[in-house]
Image 1: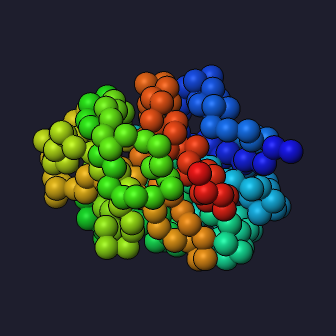
Image 2 (image 1 turned 120 degrees about the horizontal axis):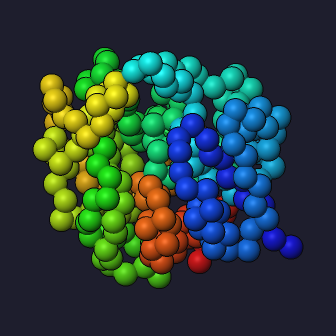
Length: 255
């Protein structure tokens, strides 16, 4: 009998058909794919607690428009349901722009070990993005999530320049051959204001080169993988292997 996989998306554009092909390449899963805002209520009603595996590919909690952005936290029911899942020991995988989701829910980003910021604030400057960055992914650990993956492999994907708490996480994959400095990224706040691919008036300290790691959410493993901006990344066989491994690992299975 197939295990159940719940996929959450919405809040950020993506190419739907290639992403669906990716999801259905990751193993023998009975897939339920929910989009926000309906996904938020479904999770509050128990959908996440019932699933064997959970994949976040969402960026919820934002409203963009007129050159600005507003944010809100998730419902108390959503927060409570995920907390119950993690407290029970059932983990999850978060991909790519999930690092930016729920900006007003601090616990989410404490669990994730980092946060992409669309606006400057007490945390410091807004974060940086860079599409179609070519780099070498370097495996950092002997870990089930990177089992059967080469020690290094090429990736072309979007990268982020944002705060990552390396002291609180277990490194799994780093990006080499691409400098995580202001000069290689663009300002998220400028993009929100309608100035795409701009770093005018923007400063940011050097960032972490980590693109994959494990952290803990309550009593459960939480894997974050920065892979996943579009079809090139979706089709990368090593990215697929890592995602498949991560789902199995967070569902309590070893390769």
